[in-house]
Image 1 (spheres, rainbow, N blue to C red):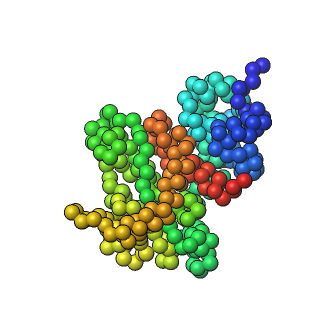
Image 2: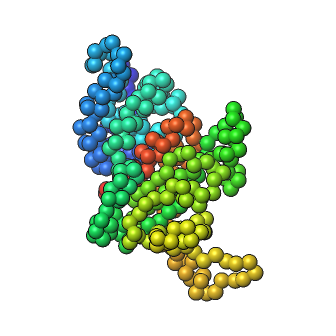
Image 3: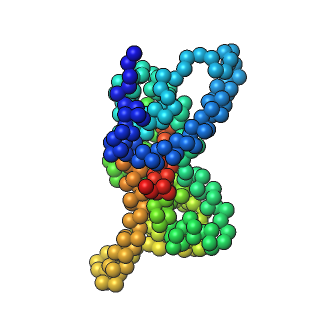
Length: 308
């Protein structure tokens, strides 16, 4: 009988390696797995009952080779390192096709258990009192920016190839708009249908978050025009240097202070891209991008909310 090279039991005995491979400490993983483990029987029953043409009784058929905990570990390792299914099959002692199926079947449960941006945004839209707002937006500040993710060149569709090409990155990309609070918690994230060719501000105008009126939002120079187009919201932008005109010392100091405050969202995007599945060229089908980016964003949020 063979055993996988990597499992929760083996990895948890080396805490530094556990965090490097999964992005979570052993305690953080144990805490969140309590929720995943409690939801798993109901999730599995719902998954098996979904197909109306099913003839075999629920509970019949071949069992999963890995335990639930090890399958969650496999998903985290896959996201963090973005290894191929071939390497994952060797490490976890599975067939390559089983790796793909095992990851896909448990991703939805993991997504339901993380504090993904969609959940937080639904809560923030219902905030009424200043105390409630300050709980989610310390200092009544929010930070917004876009991030690009490389994708393979769409070879079969010339129109898609042109629309997804980013002149800034010199490659084909999709974009996400992120909004965070002062702690770096990702409150809002757009879907993947924002193509690399679209300007950041154009994406914002069509997909901007609805934040409480007391919130002051900070942007970079890519969002020029936000004060004019959205006068009802409080907005702060850096001062743009005009042609043949130098900025004064006060203006330079203002821009420096603005950048020092806005660095929060750059750090949040950096945390997301530490998971190589969100940084390398996206090898999966594009329709899976939203689910995967939700899970990674939820991981980042969970770490911020449970620092230990």
